[in-house]
Image 1 (cartoon, rainbow, N blue to C red):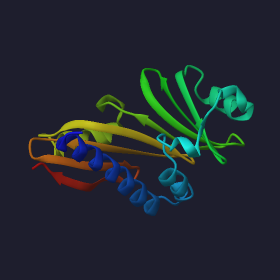
Image 2: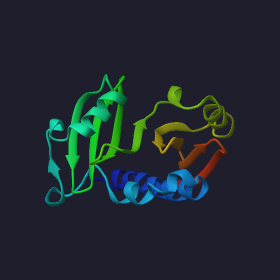
Image 3: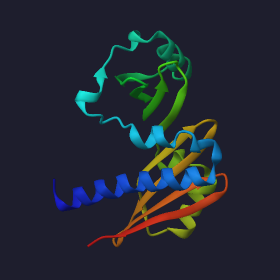
Image 4: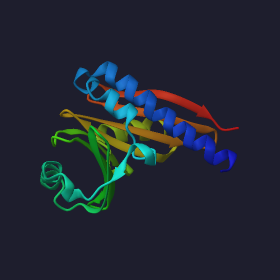
Length: 176
């Protein structure tokens, strides 16, 4: 991996960790999922997870099918406590986590600028006009929705989060 690719990957991972911690402090409804979100990823070590057939847990698949009837390209992973699925929904990449009892932990959906809330897009256009959208996600958990956007310009990256409380800059990283 080149230095630039490692830098970008590290920045994105750090941003997600910072976003999760900061958001959990502001919205108590999401605080309950933080350990699940932080400790479980879609890149679980092979020794700790098993690829499963979605039909192996009909409770989870029934909940999943109800939430995402048009889901395509499903890839499932499970451990002793949770099931994770990555898939395509209406042309967007999505990742979701469920308990084995079929309860939804969270949904993370990749976003383009047009998928972001209007207030967030306006704030980006006004305060970060020289930046371009590098990556954005929508995070849904326990009825709360938040957005995270990583913007890039020639000098570096800035990570923003958006909640009903407004826009907050949570990280800046300069390019070398």
